[in-house]
Amino acid sequence: MNLPPQLIRSLLRAQLALRRASLDVLIAGVLVLAAAAMWFALLPGLTTRIADEARAVVRARSAPPPAPVLSPQAMAAERLAAFYAALGDAGHTEQIVTHLFGAASDTGVVLDKTEYKPARDPAGRFETYTIVLPVKGDYAKLRSFCEKVLTTVPYAALDDMRFKRGSANDQTVEASLRFTVFLRPAQQGKSATLVAAGEVHK
View: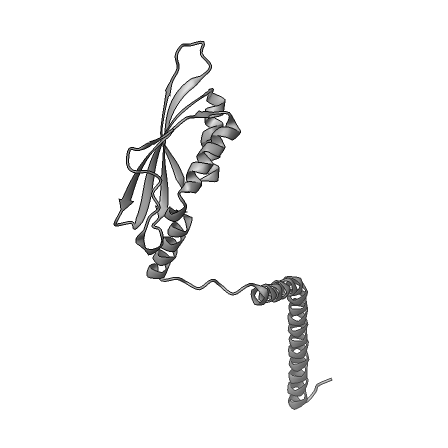
């Protein structure tokens, strides 16, 4: 059967349109499936990230405010104030003597006399007392005595230790200990003096 050419052209156009429509539907379906797969693959990670960011925001809001930044001048002034606060009081140096003899009594060390030498540091605006202690006892007692002094007089420093023993079998050791205590000047520029330089207490 011979069909008119016009009809044949119409049928061919229809066939091409159907094929093109099927291809478009197929492509659209593939794109939809790919989008769905990506969505389900990325959704758990996206949810976790959102939850982490929400927790981070909560922590940031509940955190204490940051400490103010101090200028170098303010920091230096603060450290200087802390230094002076840690010094002893030159107006109550008699307490140092009490602590020394109390430490000797507590540790069983023989302390018969003490020698003091006061000094002043004009640049640092603090006073010092160098204290020389001739003591007797065994090594354990002498060590305990030093620890006791440094604990009860925290503004003191142990500068020197010298030991002498009469014989190898002698358990008693004669030691010369030198401490330096650091003190704030007394009120109104008057320092309480333990003793004059070089004076000995017995």
